[in-house]
Amino acid sequence: MADLASRITKPAEEPAASNTVPEDSIEGANSVGLVESSYDVEVKLADLQNDTDSPLYSVTSFDQLGLPSQINDGLLAMNFKKPSKIQEKALPLMISNPPTNMIAQSQSGTGKTAAFVLTVLSRVDFTKPEQPQALLLAPSRELARQIQGVIQTVGQFCDNLKVEAAIPGAVSREFGVKASIVVGTPGTVMDLVRRRQFDVSQLKVLVIDEADNMLDQQGLGEQCVRVKGMLPKTIQILLFSATFPDKVYNFAKKFAPNANEIKLRHQELTVKGISQMYMDCPDEGKKYDILCKLYGLMTIGSSVIFVRTRESANEIQRRMEEDGHKVSALHGAFEGANRDALLDDFRSGRSKVLITTNVLARGIDVSSVSMVINYDIPMKGAGDREPDSETYLHRIGRTGRFGRVGVSISFVYDKKSFDALSYIANFYGIDLIQLSPDDWDETEKKVQDVIKSSRARPEYAPNALGN
Ligand SMILES: Nc1ncnc2c1ncn2[C@@H]1O[C@H](COP(=O)(O)OP(=O)(O)OP(=O)(O)O)[C@@H](O)[C@H]1O
Image 1 (cartoon, helix red, strand yellow):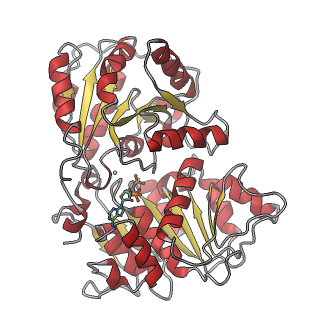
Image 2: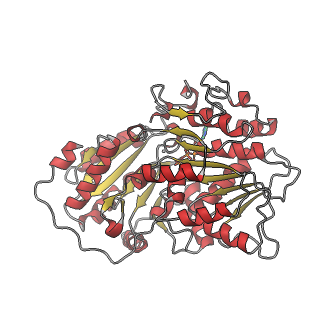
Image 3: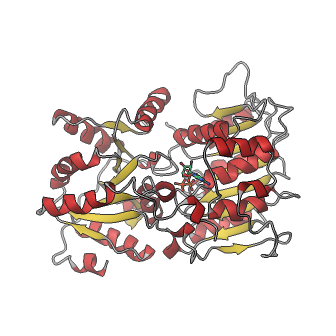
């Protein structure tokens, strides 16, 4: 990556500040080495679980976890043969009694969802199907719906399983929440509780997925704190994410006191199956032409193009369609049902190229995604001056899920974007592969070599985990 930084000979002018607003952390509005044996996952056990020789610490098959048989049947139906490391390490701690809080970090696409879903299912009393007992919070309606789907699939053999999504427009005003498990976005959950449409008095577990994003005081943090304030004081709190910047981590420890912790160093966070590349674009205007040239490669699998604003998502979609390409755009300005339909089309492969904002940067699991394009390098802070390393990692993690391979291509074109990508690469210790817009044969070869092998044997397979 020193290479990338040293390529800047003459600082380009800073682009004029855009007056369009980046789409981050707006609720509904309106995925290396986890599996490498050398992986150094630091497990800090809380008082109850501090013996690394304990059977709770090391579990090699789902059977050994003592989960109810109907849950194991669900895992079998999903063809989950062996737990991933995070599942192996976190599950015994989370399902043990008395319940203990958890702060868990593991790379994108390594099965954090099943880890917390199994915990939730193991805690629910299915004889009370309409009494809310578990609440799961996620930053977007798409992720909430996805988690709801995973619960329904893993729990398909649990009699009386009722899961409801507390996302805008989903809960009946007349009846309120009538399910034992509720997955929602924080603003909607807060409204439902306030309107007394969601009885939280018997909740036993609170899961916060993408917890660093959800607890960030610049974003959804305040809402999550308010929701927690409405819940029983004894509730078990489980916080999950691939990233936990120090500042948020310190707050997370207060939010989930005395928690067990599974933490990674940032150099351990990148997923080896993702080949990270960058395209050196001559200027901002040429980014679009380069994107169109990449289009053929993008449709080999499915791909996601991340842009900074809703406006540029719309604009790129419009131009690409005019140029005869078939692409979809999804962002927070679309109405809920439309968003759901767009993502369903993408999941099923009916649409193959999705242009989106940070609203879909986190958690979305579509295994066919073989390429992610950072059309704009993710930035954060006042005036978008700071490189957003966390969002970069989540965005590229939409490919390379659970042992698959994929490519990410980040577009740079001026000093600011070069410096930002350099910073991110140094932060994670990544060696980025350079692509040249002047040598398309070479570019195609580099990209195709990876994505054509995406069906090849994964670099790490489930049965290689947990050693
Ligand atoms: N034990 C397992 N065996 C096989 N596949 C699994 C297993 N656990 C999870 N998976 C699959 O791995 C994929 C990624 O899982 P998941 O979406 O939970 O990742 P994640 O860690 O939450 O990622 P992110 O940080 O991006 O949210 C999913 O398609 C899931 O079905």
